[in-house]
Image (cartoon, rainbow, N blue to C red; front, side, top):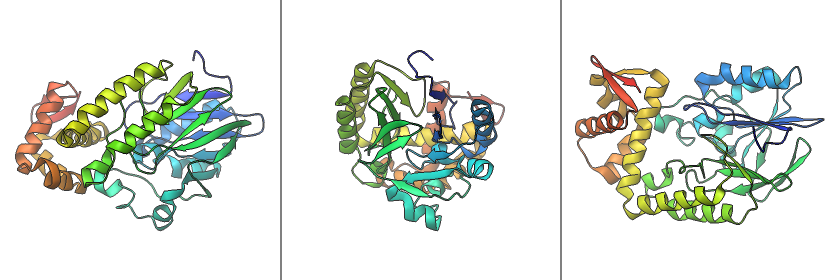
Length: 302
């Protein structure tokens, strides 16, 4: 990849799984983020091929949404890798509190994993012979981290900044501040000397200023009316389930969405629609954007 140091390999994943960054040092190998549970065999294959017989020494997570940590257990079983997670999530993982970890709320899967260490904002990490700074990046997730390598001017931005936007601002769905934190995270990124961004989803990119401008405009649009953020979240929840299952009976969509605590809370707080009507609206939005199509009595991934 143009501009990527030889010591770094990016596995750009399709949706369901986040991107992964593999650091290949002379004495150590490190993987940042591990993808979704159902893609774990693919994650293992990608890592094994890139390592070419070397062990995977360390695994870090930017945050603990299922698409970023769903491969942790498989990697730990294969390599016994030292694992570090955001410090604020330690008790939830230790107790395996799936509700607090968001897996239950979103109806997503994650095999139980453990951890050996935690990472907090402000920590300076030596990873594969390179210095990386862990920076707090709340907004999409209140405990998310991003990782910055000053020497290479590379930023692992997770879901705080994509080339065209950012992840759903989930805290706002529960009435917790998230828009202001997302804006502060964008402001923080703007202060860094970055030549290459490796986002949580999508291709790595170099035009950071343009991406920040698009992200700020998107944030302005969503924060002007929190219902927009809620509607976006509902669409994302259904699309994720559709990506995982590929086909869902149309008649089952309302009950499926109602089974998700986050959907129920979001509707009760912000959308306030009859569940059947909201389910129909969500389906129509996926169809309109060609993110899904109808095949007989089924909603099919687009």
